[in-house]
Length: 68
Image (cartoon, rainbow, N blue to C red; front, side, top):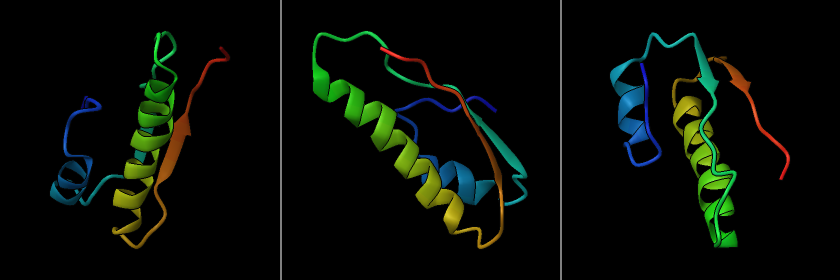
């Protein structure tokens, strides 16, 4: 199920408690504003981890990133 950076990640996770794994590929790799990198690359990842932690069980997260 594709989920975008503007979606309510917490709602997606709580609506799908059977999630076994997440492949996290979303990121900002080109921006003229440095804050975009933190807001998306760190912020969205943190929201994902926080939402998954509410499941109170292990969920595999495959994370992919690039260098800048």
